[in-house]
Image 1 (tube, rainbow, N blue to C red):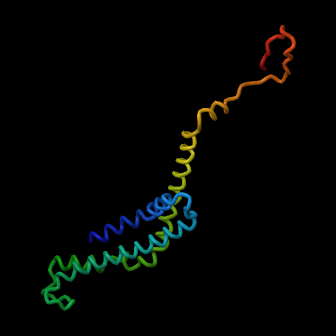
Image 2 (cartoon, helix red, strand yellow; image 1 turned 135 degrees about the horizontal axis):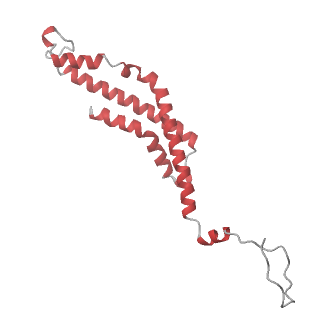
Image 3 (cartoon, rainbow, N blue to C red; image 1 turned 90 degrees about the vertical axis):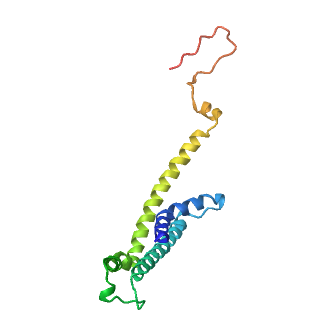
Length: 164
């Protein structure tokens, strides 16, 4: 049961893990479209592994109530705990439909994560470029008005320049 829970967390974090690993590659980063496909396929297979781990855990829990070991339940073996375990195994259609519904769910989950991560990365790069801008470049960007009248430097009594 613990393995199934861990795999569920890994499934939820798969787009973030793929994005982070790609960011660690530096100059050899994978294009975001290819990374999206990789994250989607990886997430789908992790989802299927989580479903299989959950199925196995529920089967183990159910068959520990099988006293004679014939993998079938007689009236004498059907205790309240055995009935609850059997209900958990038989009443979960999500595990049965996971291979079918896993594709669109993984696509939507990966899309949401990639949109949010793309926005966060864009804002982070913009802020980082603003913080790393040299002071000299900031001073150059401040402009002072200039005169369009050429200065005559031969006249020592020239009036001061008036800015419009």
